[in-house]
Length: 330
Image (cartoon, rainbow, N blue to C red; front, side):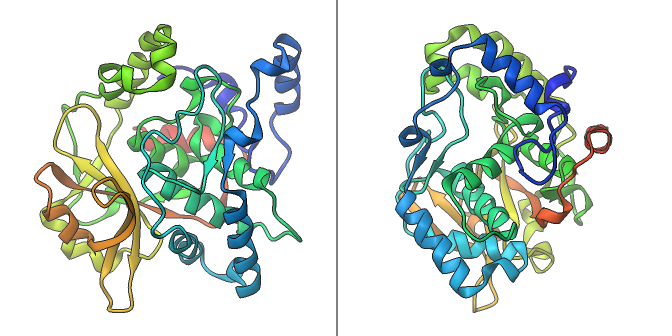
């Protein structure tokens, strides 16, 4: 794996919880070296659905969601997004500048789970009021390697399997998969989706010089020690899973480790269901049981599981973050 250098020293910069590790100095240097128009995107581009954001925040404040466990908070947010339309490639918002972004009007599978978790983390930081920037900071912290985006497309965590390792190391989501009964490592997987389908990705299509570095990222991701629960064993572990758990859908095919992602939600009938932004249904839905959903698709191999952690557990020490990541990758 490449040295993390700047990224590894910016562990908590975006969370707003503690002083950063040299963030101000590094960002000042970057600002001095590039014009403002090259560093940022208009708010209308990076944040869509501000009226929905305000409605959800008002409801959360009125009903005291901040005092709920983070898994329950995550699903409360998810339910507010229930029924919203599915839209693919919602992270591809510009031709050149990478930026944290939120779209509460239309979602794909990644932005559904990410924004539900991000808003749950935001509400966990009790404040007199919340702004779109508060949510953008949470999105930045979980979406980007090292927790910070400086405008570089390659800083984004593009593959879900890596997201579990990065966010476990930073104390935002415990990667449970290897410790669950029946877990098996996925071996021999070729990771190549983005460089194979590069014309589908706006940034890569407009910046083909990124293909070489992206291939290096894919080769690194392919070496990660990725475990999954085979789908024949998922029903047996469903009682151990909780509302709000992040559920990655492992695929049988080369290209990536995961093909889809959503959230676990235990409904009033006691069934642990899969909540996700569905391309088939063209909207956010609460689907069948997780095991039932898996059995509908021959390409689905099983699941990866992450459990959201309270904001108080966020890693604030650079050395601890690096040690955590090293431990998880061995």
